[in-house]
Amino acid sequence: MRSRRARRWSVSTDASLAIASFFAPGSIAVVGASANPQKIGYVVLDNLQRGRYGGRLYAVNPRSPRILGLRAYPDVLALDEAPELAILTVPTRAVAKVLDQCGQKGVRSVLIITAGFRETGPAGRVAEDELVATARRYGMRLVGPNSVGVINTSARLNATFAETAPVQYEVGMFSQSGAVAAAILDWARSIDLGFSKFVSLGNMADLNEVDFLEYLGQDVDTKIIVGYLEGISDGRRFMAAAQRVTKAKPLIVIKVGSTPGGARAARSHTGALASAEAVIDGAFRQAGIIRAITMAEFFDAILCFSYAPLPNGGRVAVVTNAGGPGVMAADAIERMGLSLAELSHETRQALAEGLPPAAALGNPIDVLGDAAADRYQVALEAAQADPSVDALLALLTPQRVTEPERTARVIAHLARQQAKPLLAVFMGGAAVGRARAMLDEMRVPVYAYPERAVRALAAMVRYRAYLNEAG
Ligand code: COA
Image (cartoon, protein in one colour):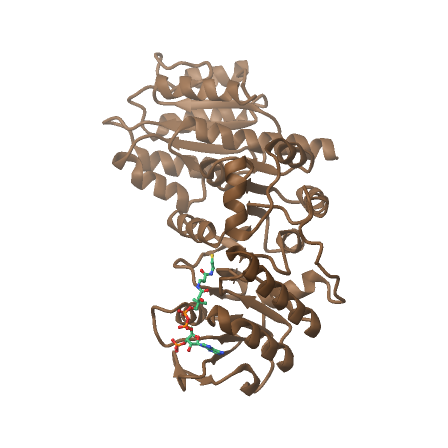
């Protein structure tokens, strides 16, 4: 991986200190705030207000005296104080001048949402370099340009123009694509998954993915870090930071643009330089980064790492109410380097006592098509207690007598009992929709297909092995 950040400078303020101003500013000015609900400058201010941001909030706009109930100032210089954070939603042509005014005013942190710089070609690159030079002159730090914004749920800060605001939870996210991030926020909201902090990095003229990775690595509100990357600004620094962070928290990264075609697309998106597939793969593995190749894998891993404890090993018990899904799960388990647990004599005995004679007591444990929630309880409890089981899968397909919702409750209850991951796979459509939503609410990782659950589980097993090796 080559460094494209030769022009990075070292400033006296540590990046992490600067980032704190983006995530928890005492005051914010939205420069380019607008009274027109169709404008980004309106949405950003509106999102801040709706999110009940508690600091001092200023609107800056030379044309309107009042915006969203706030007095609007004609420019940054007219503000009563230097805001801790300035958010720029002015048109591209106005950014350079506004940034200079921010510098004159004494603003230290500037989030530039406006697009139209490096990603547009040579002239944009020059314009972006000029922004960097201005920031350097005044000692300002930048996020963006071309950013969707930042979120910190614990500070009630939604400084984005995203449609969906996340609920509070323990996932910290950095993304080199604002649009992908917005989609992830929306997906997460639909399944009740929350975030601690979120940053859309934009073009990374100044602060980049490594700075935020280091910050999130130290952040007490963040237990899992997830990242969408198109390019890596400084490979060596990124890997060194990842190596430190992954010893304490899982880091799940989707790195796209590693094929020649993808690399070309990435260059015209954020101007990022991508690296070869094999190099990325090896480097990620060494640094303990959980790599997702597809968006589906990325989502699935986020869910699993967010809600389930890490398994001690890869021996899996499968409980199912149908043979087919059990076979699919068994295939996936072997394909992905895990194994079906050999159930102990005691476990088989408990199963024989609690299940009907026709039930299959091996592994997969088939509780039969007419199983109600109580049979899942018997089987899952027995398997959970078995020391030769590291992780469990509860598979359900809807038959007439199946109780998807009651079974979901049983699974959620048992998932909380033991420090072994228990993943649910509820296959089907309308008949299992409500149960899936309940599992989401109760923070149990739930999947629509066995292979997706097994792949996510396999990532956890590999991460556990990495932690064991790393000591
Ligand atoms: N100081 C303060 N406000 C200023 C200003 C200045 N120097 N110059 C202009 N403004 C105001 C305008 O008056 C306008 O407010 P109004 O609606 O009250 O007139 C507001 O800033 C926006 O300017 P406008 O010319 O209407 O631009 P726009 O809203 O059409 O576009 C951006 C501005 C930032 C949205 C646009 O340039 C852009 O970059 N869009 C893409 C952003 C993006 O997608 N980023 C993330 C990518 S993932």
